[in-house]
Image (tube, rainbow, N blue to C red; front, side):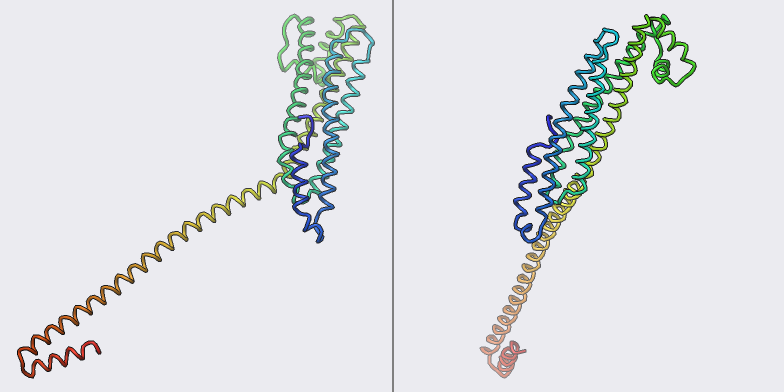
Length: 304
């Protein structure tokens, strides 16, 4: 979870580079693969920086929430600085992934499988932090509304108060600010602006990660196509084997039928010859020309 590119990702690409060495010596894509691996190393560094900045942003936000000294803008400044660095790291990482998507050689296409889970996990982390900041902002606004109005606000009222776009709620916003001392009201307004900016920055960051996820999915599409084609080919091969076995079985049955038919015809011929010979012998013993005629017919029968 500490970096985007897993060891298996780089190892798979390196293995692909070794496997394609003979082809690259004959004009293959080894230079492209080396450039791709360099992009992968740079993306690993960007991911490590992004992880660190995300932790710093979370810590700075927690510290700014507990700051009670009026006029101490250190917590807010740290939060803003962490957010700026985090957005910068995310933009660099997105640019790296876009470059990898354009320049990825075919042997390194399997690397996309190792990226998908990492990008989705980071997107979930950013979404969780954004939801936390938004929930804290709404909770603070609801607490101040309850103090001034005496009853809890509805979700629609909270949305209008936090959006700062509905003039009908201007009086309520003014009442919320005037309910506290001037210094505290100013501090609350600064804190609300800071939380709003952090929330907008996290929303932009989440969109960046969604773009990265789309890039990674695009890199993995050729792999999915290859897997589908391999599965279809395996099915075709299995069907062909079944057809071949059936053809061999039918061929064997036809051969046996021909042998049986030839044997039956030969047996009938032998029986006919035997009957003719026996009849001729019987007639010969009885004497007479009739016997000679029968013997002549029996002698001529096989020739015919």
